[in-house]
Image: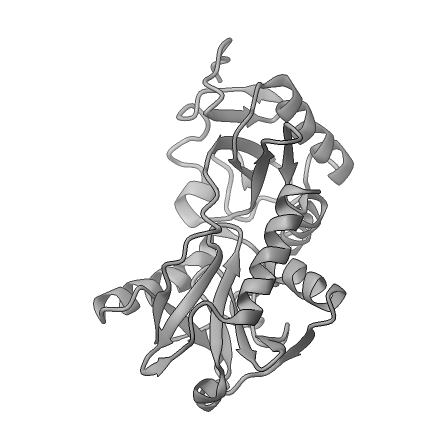
Length: 294
């Protein structure tokens, strides 16, 4: 492993406590590379120009979910939650970061270990520049995928693991081939689950409606924050199973997630939705204030 004395702060890589080159980490025979056996969290950092502070969006919640994924994969992590959070803040403090960034923490099987390995688990923390796109007014068109969402007795969707994203890749490519910009999944029972890499919300009157945790979703950190902010501001939230034939009854819809932040949906198949919906704009305002004023 080669140490690097000076690292471009636009693209930092931190491996088991040591700065390294971004292409100097894993073997080609690594089990995580060959079989996708890893878990990770992507965390946005929002730079507040007024306060000169970098706010890491719901860091504790992200780290909690990372360790839940790690435990589900039976990884024996070499670091505690507290130590990992301290390591992240140390990285931030040691580098002159004054812009919005994307931080990714990955736990993976290291070396040329078997894919049944549980103990030889390493971690990589990478940070790169990533501007917020939360004010993007472009709306997305989504297909309903013919691929069902993975379920608990197949590949538990609650785990944020690299291998699980093959499910999303199939659905996304299918949607793109059909002329849409993305896709949503249905559960094996025919209920709406989520999109390819983000949670979904619908609006009906003054109520936010989103698939519940039994709808084979990855329980999103952004999703949970939106629910919390909505309830704090006396907006009714309904978490429940949503049938596909309910789509025409909804006035508006949007996606939520770390990468996509918030994005309006223009249509799902032939069902069109309002843009710039009043309740959506309220949620957008609440979330922006939270992201930049922590």
